[in-house]
Image 1 (cartoon, rainbow, N blue to C red):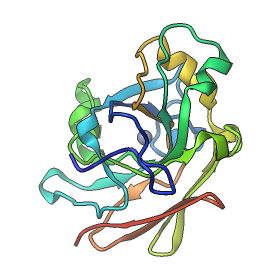
Image 2 (cartoon, rainbow, N blue to C red; image 1 turned 135 degrees about the vertical axis):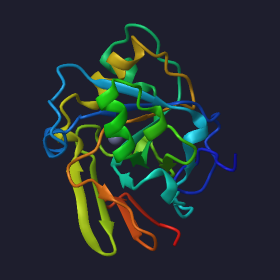
Image 3 (tube, rainbow, N blue to C red; image 1 turned 180 degrees about the vertical axis):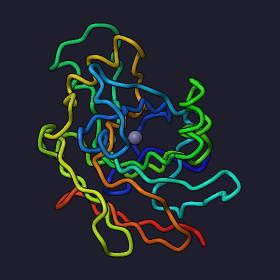
Image 4 (cartoon, helix red, strand yellow; image 1 turned 60 degrees about the horizontal axis):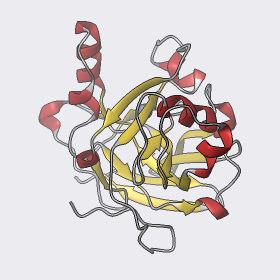
Amino acid sequence: MNYQHRYADGSPADLPVGKVVCVGRNYAEHAKELNNPVPTEPLLFLKPSTAIVPLAESIVLNPSRGPVHYETEIALLIGSTLSGEVNEAEATAAIAGVGLALDLTLRELQDQLKAKGHPWERAKAFDGACPLSVFIPATSAPQLDDIALQLRINGEVRQQGRSAQMITPIAILLQQISTVFTLLPGDVVITGTPAGVGILHAGDRLDLSIPGQLELSTSVQG
Ligand code: ZN
């Protein structure tokens, strides 16, 4: 795998590459746009470490598997183990960095799997399904309840949101996740997407940002 967790200055994070814990429907407007009910507790799923690719590398589509949708999400790099019941301060202290991820989704396949009551992994956990950015070190990242994110495609704003709009805020998410999945150093948590998801097309240029903190670009191979 040619991926290694890195900080925004290019320096490697001294952490292995672990699993990705993903949160679904954490912004009410996004749940609404897909006609999904807003969950009463966080909807969690996993992507394996093999889904992670560097965000800066262009995205490769596989048209035989159907259209790939983008979901832009705030990503948290975990720096120390969180397991079982932890308090809010412990949860927050485990964050080594804040970055961005794309939760790539084969939406038509996901809809078919959902209709059959089958797991989503084929639609969300495939190789390359989690392009991941470099991370702002936690010491210089914005306050956890004040992180903004934006996605532009070919210059047009498609998604924007703020962590303050999350149904379950970041610290509480980590507290709830750690009671189910032990978070290990090098794991990543992606925290749900705001409204505006859609299909990626060959040749698209994507500009993702945590405004004022992190500016990233990638493209879709075509
Ligand atoms: Zn997502």
